[in-house]
Length: 256
Length: 256
Figure 1: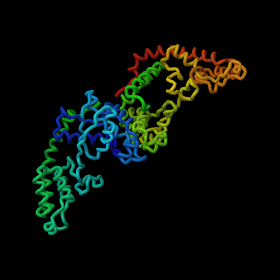
Figure 2 (figure 1 turned 90 degrees about the vertical axis):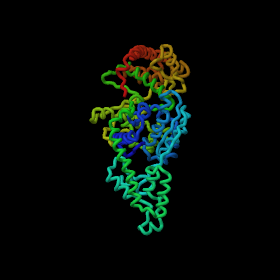
Figure 3 (figure 1 turned 120 degrees about the vertical axis):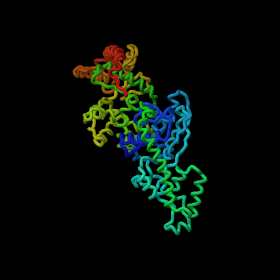
Figure 4 (figure 1 turned 45 degrees about the horizontal axis):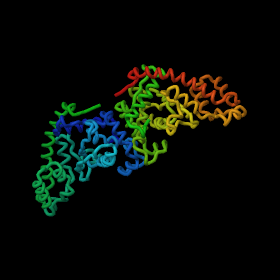
C-alpha cells in the first residue's frame, strides 16, 4: 500500500505488526516470504521501472480517479505493486503462474498489472479478492473517524473487544416488544456480518441464526454475547500465537 | 536520468562507462562516491517517497511539459533525482549544504527540489549548470539521428575523431576566395565552440583565433587540424587513464 499520511517509519512498524498476525495464523515459513517494499526495493525497483514505462498517467487517472493534484508517489505506486506478480518468474528465470489474494480495494493495481504483464513477458496474475472487514458501526468499511471503536483489533484485550461488540450496530428494533413481534434485520446487522464472514463456519447454524433473528426469537444482547464468546476464544489463542511469532519473524522476512 | 528508451541493463552499462570517464579525469576516491540509482535504491527510496508526497502531477506537468500520455516512471523520477541533495544530511544527521553540478537539462528536477527541500527539513540545494556539449553539426545539442558523427566520444580512436572534426560544420564561406575576403563566422562554428568550451583555456589565444577567423586569415581546414591536434592529445591521455580506471572502479562505487 502507498500510505500518504504515514511516515516510512510508521509504515515499517505497521508492516511488522501485520506480519505478526500472518505468522500467528500458521503460515509455513518454508513456503512464506514476507517483505516490506522499502526493505526489498533493490530487488523490486528494476522490474518496477520496466512496468512504469508501460503505464501512463491516463491509465492511472482513469483507474483510480486521480487528478493533477495527486502526488507522484501515489501515481507511481502501481509499478511497485505489480512486482510481486513477477518476482517468482524472475527469480526462477521461467514463467511461473501467480495468484494474488488481496483486499478488493487493491484490485485496481492488479487490473493494470494484467494489462501490461504479457508486454513484459510474464503471465497475467490471477486474483482472489477478500471483502473488506465490515464495520461494527454498520457501514461497509471501517472508518478512521470512529477511532477504532468500529472494529475489533487483533491486539484488543478482552474488555475492549467486549465493549466494541456490545456497542455494535445491529438490525434490532427500538424495543424488545417490537423485536419479538417484528423480528430483527440481519442484512444490515454488523454482528450478523461478523458471524457470516468470520465466526460461524457452519452454514446450517448460520441459517438458524438468521431465522432466529428474523423471527424475533433471539435478541441483540444475546446475539452479541454469543459472538463475543467466539471472538474472544479466537483472540486469546491468536494473541498467544502472536507473542510467539515475535521470536520467529526472521524466519519469514526477506530483505535485500 | 530516466531513460525511457533504455533497458535497466543498458543504463547500468552506460553508468559504468560514464564512471570510467569521471575516474579518468582525476577525481579523488576518498572524496568521491559514484552510485547507480538501481544499485543504491534501498538507501534512496525512503527519502524519494518523502519527496514524492510533496510533489503533485500539476507541478511535474508544468515543469516538464508532461501530459497524460507520459509514463508514471518519468513522472515519479524527480523524487529520485532529489535524493542526492539530501543524502549527506541524512547520513551525517545534520543539515549539510549541497552543491549540484549538472547539465542544464537536469535543472528542472532541482528547481522542484528547491521548492520542497525546506518542507522536508533540508536546505535548498545550490546548482552550477554545465552547458550541453555543442554538436559538431552546428546545432546546439547533440542529436541521436547523426549516429554519433556530430560529437567526439571519449572512446573514439584517432581516425574516427579526425574524421568527425574534419567533417564538422563551420562558419566558413563557400569558397576560399570569399573567406579570405569576407572572413568566417566563429559564432555559428562548431570548431570554434569546441575551442571556446574545451580546448583553448587561454582567453588571449581564443580572442586571437576569433580575430583570425573574422579577418579571413585562417581557413577552416587549418582551424580543424589545430583543433584535432588538441583533441587527440587530450583523448590519448584520457583513454590511457580510462583503461587504468577499470581497475579502480570499486574504489569509487557505493552500493546498498
